[in-house]
Image (cartoon, rainbow, N blue to C red):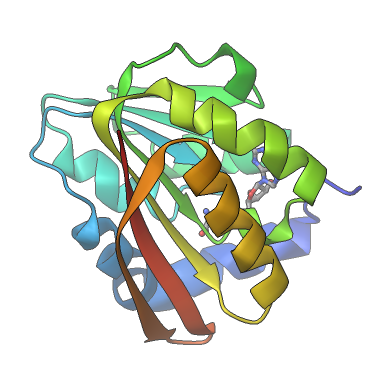
Length: 183
Ligand SMILES: C[S@@+](CC[C@H](N)C(=O)[O-])C[C@H]1O[C@@H](n2cnc3c(N)ncnc32)[C@H](O)[C@@H]1O
């Protein structure tokens, strides 16, 4: 499986971020339940499109940006160079400390991951949340089988569904946004 993007992909994503940053990524960051002091994980952070808006909100908190790709993580370091409250991790989800996080979010990440890997990742994300912590995802609606797998793994890992809605996102189309609370 390919993990590293081409230079063209990084360039086009930066361009999309400049053009659609507010309408695509900020709208998602604004939905997260943040007060400023939380410990937050951006799982599959890419170049930091959402993290750029989340980091601004965490004046007393901490953000972990995690990605499997070294090139995306380097691009993310560049996007977030002016913030001091960020840790960058390359594929270390099994090492996330248990019950240490208030919020985990995944933006256009889970739909592209195999079922086998989701069966390892979702339990690790659930474990990393404190009781009462929140997991939020936004994923495209075109792969309904994958969405069903994600929903059932959430349930198996004691993540209770709180809310969902379908939104039409500029250039990306219909996406499902869901919020889960750890029991
Ligand atoms: C479509 S991009 C989305 C990036 C970012 N969340 C955004 O919305 O702009 C998917 C990202 O997930 C990362 N990713 C894919 N599989 C992963 C895994 N198993 N663990 C961590 N990151 C992964 C990719 O490297 C890529 O950066």
